[in-house]
Each structure stands twice: as C-alpha cells, then as structure tokens.
Length: 262
Image (cartoon, rainbow, N blue to C red):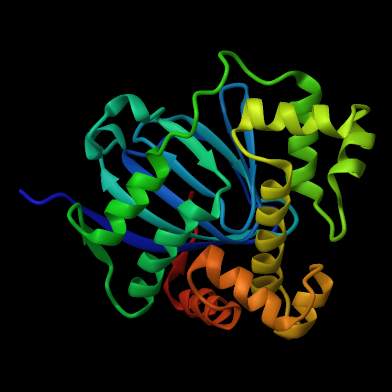
C-alpha cells in the first residue's frame, strides 16, 4: 500500500490558545505568517514565517498563537512518525522545530502544488523526499547537553525581536560577551554562523511583512535592510525558491482552504 500525506491549511485568529493535547497523525507544519509558541514538556519553541515543525502522532503539546495569530500549511499522516518515513530512524526526535529556509524551500514547493489543486503526496514524491531529507539532515555533531543559559536566551530574543541593522557586535554587547566569543559559541551550539543566522532572520522578516502587511515589495525591501527591491528579490528567491510577489500570492491563495486546528 502506498503511503501518502494529506495537505491542509489553517488560520488561527489572534489570541488563540490550545491547551496540552495530542493528535493521532504525524504533522509536518510550515508557518506562512504570524507567530506561534509551542510547548512540549518544559521546552518551548518560538516560530514565525518559514519555521517548520515535525511532530509525530501522540506528542503532547500546547500552542499559543499570540496577538498576531498565524497561518500554517500542514501535511498529515495517520498514526505516522518521521522515523518510519526515512532511512535512519535515529535522525528523528519525535518533535523538532527548525528555522532554516533550506527546510522551508521544499515545503513551499508542496504548498505551491496544493494551491494548484494537489492535496495528496505519496512518499515517493520528489518534493516530499526533499523535505524529509532537509528535516533530517545533520550538520557537524553538536556538543552533548544544551547551550549555556545566556546563549539560549540570546538566540531566543534574537529570533523573536530581530531588527534591521542589527550586528553581531550589538548582539554580543547585549549578551555581555565579546563578539568573537559569541560567534564561536553560536557555531559550537547551533551549528551556524552569526552572519548566516542574521541573513535567515532578515529573509523571515521579509516573508512576514509580505503576508501580514499591504506594503509594496519595494517598501518591504527598504524596511528590512535590503539595498533595494532587486536585492530582496535575489536573496528571497535564493533562500525560498520563489520571488517575494509569488510568495505573497501563494499565501493569500491558501485563505480559501484554511481551517483552525494545530
């Protein structure tokens, strides 16, 4: 029997909160606009546009969609787990958020196809395979345990309140550490460079502005710290796989297919 994942989309109004609950299906979800704070046990992840979560069936979680609400695209598989869909089950943790546009990119290709009327994707679908590969890819091995509290808090605040013009030096000053020590710590514990993280946050901020405001693409570019509209278009297409205008139209088109659940 062919394994297939079903597509749907949801809109959550501002102030929506869901107490701890479970689903009987695997959920792969992409935040298209807005924000969500999801809690599993004692761990809370803060997500915004282009964040992706893989959540196995049976994972107990609570969601807070805050003052902005959110729009999510979702793939589901009854009684499913990511481990059952990939070659190496150890690469799946049961619940994982990622804020990497390299994961959002193949997911958006599936959203594009769903917007054209395709709502079921079998496990052999190339875009779905790319998504699962990106979700379970491993960078260089990270240290055991978790990052120090100061770094965890710094990265959380950075992802929640990024602003144009923010530099590694300013982030380090706020954290009370040397910029080189900050960069070394971020690479050690998060597997990325500070400059790369800032680039991703700038793209995510632009994605949010495109779907949550009526600003022109040119205004989004200048407000987000890009040199001009062509600069935004080049960077956005490189990261997301489509132009800013195409992304705006794609997300807006999902409104007719949305319902509310998490």
